[in-house]
Amino acid sequence: MLSKIIFILLTITLLAATITDMRKRVIPNSLTLPMLFLLSLIRIITGGWEYFFGLIPAVILFLLYIIKPNGIGAGDIKLIAVIGIAMGLTPTISITFWMCLNFLIVVMANRLMRKKIYSLPLAPLIFLGYIITLIFPGSMIYL
Image (cartoon, rainbow, N blue to C red; front, side, top):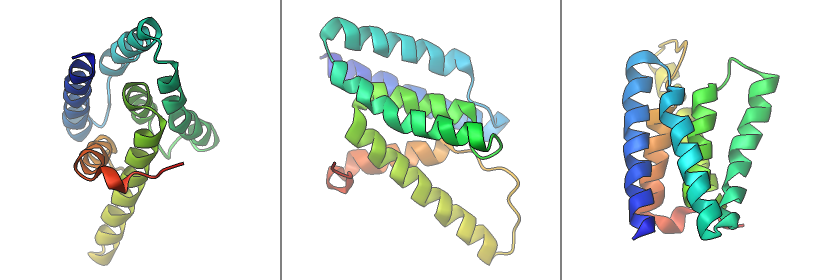
């Protein structure tokens, strides 16, 4: 029952992040921080400590953000952190992989059409990676 509630909350959060990122190019803290707090609380209470390993992709992206702040937004990193605590390490790696692949496809398609991209909202690509990972669980990268 709890896993279904987490799934619904995560899907709603990703959908809301996608919409706001596409419209305003921002993922508000009011969306990600309460989810991080709630999911952390749930994982601590239920003893789901292994889900905290799901934060590793967010930590790596944060380190890249420190090196190159214009590359990825802090909201995208917090959204990956939400996914990490909700789903754990392996699905989060898979979603991050699909986000990167989707990003490359969009960039290459725009280059072929000779369009310049100045910024690209990542939340829709994260959401697409989430959907791909759910539909094709065998596509996950296993450690």
